[in-house]
Image 1: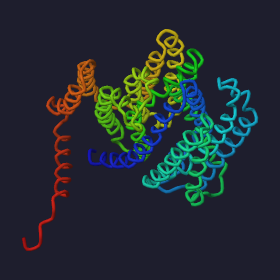
Image 2 (image 1 turned 30 degrees about the horizontal axis):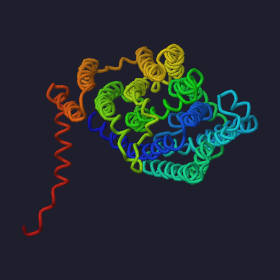
Image 3 (image 1 turned 90 degrees about the horizontal axis):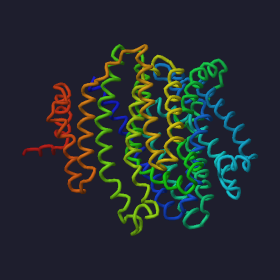
Image 4 (image 1 turned 135 degrees about the horizontal axis):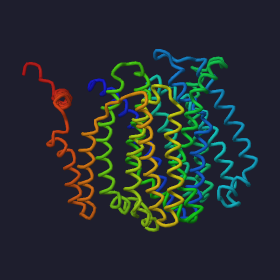
Length: 490
């Protein structure tokens, strides 16, 4: 099993490289915006993008995941399924975006965007349409394990978005409008890069295949709506309950949870196709359990690193001699460890979702995500008036934890996945002890505590004999490859 998991790790690394580089490029927009937009303008951006993220799930209809599960047979693509999925997404996206375009003013009023900025609703509508059409070719790249092509297209599109945002916002002074105009232009260019993938797989749409994919995908889309409520409901609620300036401060600092978000995101990109391809294997349950343990080991270390060093990083003078984040945004740094912990729980949810996906229990997936959505909205309404930004951060963290718990409980109905609870409890205790010890420590001591994290796992017997033997084999192989070859005659 361990050797097979190395395949997942390698593919995760490829997706991870693109995700890390791409997210880091995107993240560079945040320091730019803290120096170029005031808190209220940032609040407009954060609020509008929250609705865009929410609608992205609706536009996709779950057809990209349905294609991964039903549209590929024995590793080969089904062109009719691809064409049906693409047609379903494109028609939905066009109809919805036309409506948003013509009713941009009342929509702006409803979501709290100033009337003079209603044009960003139009930009957002067409960003949604273009990005929705890209879902199917991206799914084809993932399903065919063309991770390098997937990574390359993603990176070029993100880099273009960053460059155009710099031009439109900083050089041309277009402000909030420039943010969305840059995104729209970059999305259009990315779709053009994916055109060969579409052309290669575009078969005659099959109505029967589309119905089958919709029956699988729509419940997932409904679940995705619930999941997106967990991810983005805090920004609109903060905007409504505490004002655009607070929402802008919160949303900007929330982005500093990027490191855990990267880990979870790149893992999920590789995990879904990996486990879906092994749906019928007898050891699938044991595989899920072991992956959860390994994910928690990596995520707990990432959590400690972010919690210990994020404030120093945000205040470091690395943005053209100025702090990474403008001092006007430093008040929001307190939420970052909470946000990071929430992303960790989100990763647990992705792993515990696997039994439901393998058994095609998409209704149960929806129940798990909507549990989190209900917890998030209720907790935000309860905590924001009393605790402000910190209340919103804890509400989202609690919602992710609720989703993971619900997925675990629902998954037990049909699969007795042997999760390694004793090892997970030991890992939780060790991580918590280090976090508490470093809460008021200086940077030097925090570095020592972070280094102690893997050492403690090694000395405590957390790794069993099989895992230690596998790790020794991996390191020995790498060392042998790194050694220079002996010279001829020497």
